[in-house]
Image 1 (cartoon, rainbow, N blue to C red):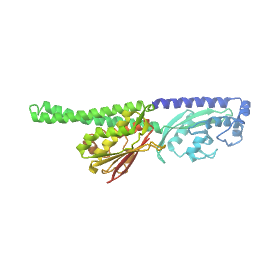
Image 2 (cartoon, rainbow, N blue to C red; image 1 turned 180 degrees about the vertical axis):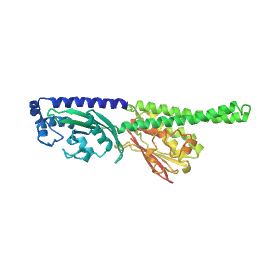
Image 3 (cartoon, rainbow, N blue to C red; image 1 turned 90 degrees about the vertical axis):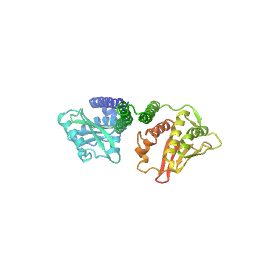
Image 4 (cartoon, one colour; image 1 turned 180 degrees about the horizontal axis):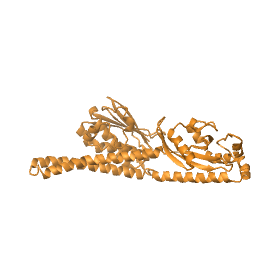
Amino acid sequence: MWLAGLHLGWVSFTVLLLVIAGLVRTDRRAAEGNARTMAVPAVAVPENDAVAAGQDDLSAIAAVLGALDAPALLISARETVRLQNRAAEAVFGAIPLGSDLAGRIRAPGILDMVREALATGQPRETEHAERLPSETVYVVRIAPLAEKSGEPLWLLTFRDVSQARRIDRMRSDFIANASHELRTPLASLRGFIETLQGPAKNDAKAHERFLGIMHEQATRMSRLVDDLLSLSRLELRSNVAPDQTVDLVPLIAHVRDSLQPLASELGVDIVLDLPAHPVLVAGERDELVEVFENLIENGCKYGQDGKRVDVALSGGTGGAPVEVSVKDYGPGIPPEHVPRITERFYRVNVEASRSKKGTGLGLAIAKHILTRHKARLVVRSEVGKGTVFTVKF
């Protein structure tokens, strides 16, 4: 979907060029009548008398550039800044108009592109990344404009594609991780099949043991495929708000009952703290069940050493916000891992996760569901003391 967005961005850019081209070709007498009544967000400063003659043209262009959300600069063939819109000022700071472009933009890649365009008279485009204060990626484009006064001008625009690049990287990582997660059990199954067909062909004990392991690996792949399908379904419905009302009191009690066999097997006690009154939220029951199953099951598995998981529900009366907290008393999560634990396939401890039959997608699914429900997941953890997952509606 984002590819279409990028294409649309260039369509808008092309339209902008056509509009500006029309402005600079407008009869000067009409421009004089209109420019004085326009609110001009960017201010042009004449560099010399020849530039002053084209001031009305610049005022008209400035009005257009001022309406753009993307940073844009108008530069001369001498690499001096003639106009700067508000978006550019927010990114680069106020650039003294008439000053040298290289004095403000010190990115060699951008300056080389500008000089190549000025030398050839042709549009050019490059990609530039800023690392600080946060990673930002711009597609930088320069294209020529013809001013009626005869001075060649160039439009330099910066289009922020950071989010698109992040999505692209996430998709690549997702495909790589999903392939790896499926390849491992498939390789294991293939190895056992070859063994059963060869050296262990007539070994009844090996048959029984290997078939048991193969069943576990097949089950693991089935869980992974189910989780992948859940994520895909949630992404398709991410913009569709739930249209039901759910009482969280019986829902959480139901989740506790469904997880009781697992908790008993692990020696964990699930303790509920639920109000006596209904606590209603807008949501879909099955999806919210999946969220709390994930959170409480994780508490039982990874907080097993603490022998207890506390689940508390609060709010819902007098306008108080609804919150559900799931607290375990396990080893906790190191602080450097906390911001990433809701990423797909992210694991604090890979071997521990796989030994507990996790797919690495549970918290990612929970986060997607909560986002659709206009809720958020807050994680607090302290190494050696446990972890608290809080859902805030």
